[in-house]
Image 1: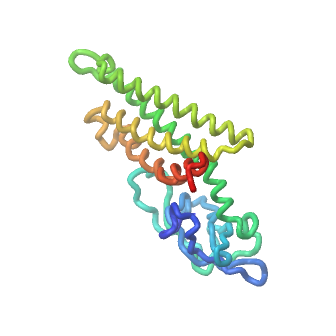
Image 2: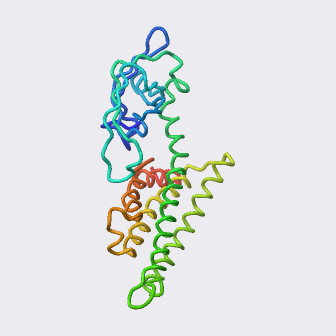
Image 3: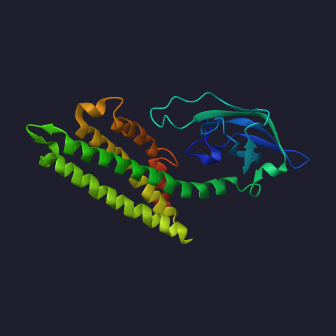
Length: 256
């Protein structure tokens, strides 16, 4: 869905898929920040494209299709284990079987996928926060200063207590959103709340944990250093913090 000029504004897609007489399409355009777009086992890329003015349709592009060209891997601050690239589509010919869902329903489909994706990213944020907390607690128990383990200092205890409390609150919210989805009930509002909460939480807990690690946490080979780098993207992927607030405001009726 993401393009150089289309991110939070998902409807600003510029990639075009010209319908052909045989029911197929010819696709031209560019996508950006696409996950797993150029690995050895990449099978396809699912894209949004304009099939007419103001009509967005989802298409499946095989990775071996002539004209499908992934760019070089992007160098990211975090998520180094995730393959992320631009994708160039130059005269890619697709038959009618490449159409995913009804023609013109692409944007609505992707927005529905994003609701579920926010639960997935929320789970990643919750898991990162829990992992950062576990590292902080383990370090505080083993690190000794002034003749005792630093976990015995009230300043450290209070930080750990706050982190544990915030993690449990976020877990409850995320699990509630997941239960609504599993039950087939509306979950857009709570999913956005969970994603907003866990994205922030991942960053604050990672930062506090790194602080508890002190100089060791600032070293590149420290496990908490990786979590500290990885946390920020959870505020961006599947909709930025601002987008979550827009969704929540709309869902609670705070709009004109």
